[in-house]
Length: 191
Image (cartoon, rainbow, N blue to C red; front, side, top):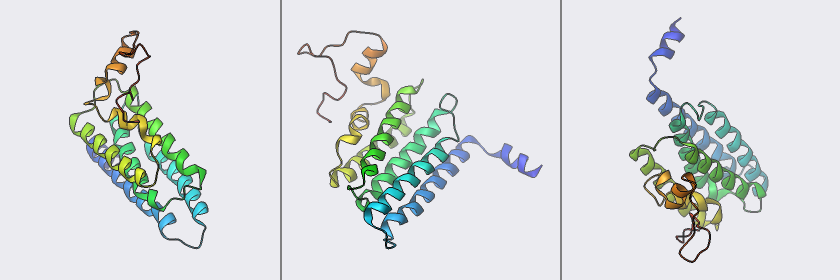
């Protein structure tokens, strides 16, 4: 009975904050796999990190349904992106999972953002933009550049649907660049 009352007293904001704090702590502990150097090879520890990272992200992201509460998922992905970028200096690029995970993380994040039926609140969009900027910088230090291309392109705008190409797609317009080529959301030099 007390558990039910405690559950009812929790506001959505507290639940989101608790979840993202829990995810952040769990991912920090997970980073110990690659920073601790417990005798495992760099490739092996990187592979283990990538597998556990994906499991952890799936566990925390599955707490919300994108159709009902998409904004908490945006926060979860922001935390995950930042955490992966922080771990990147310790990950072996010889491990094929390292690039695969960052690419899939980026694509999943883009898909989430494109699925939103309403605008992302300004403060959350600013948080998204700064997390992409941070992640891009950290990953570029490692030579990982193209995997965040679409996220980087989206972060240059004031919202998901403020990009003229995306607006045109939604309006079923035939989009051509000034040179007569099909339009590209990354054509502004970000990828």
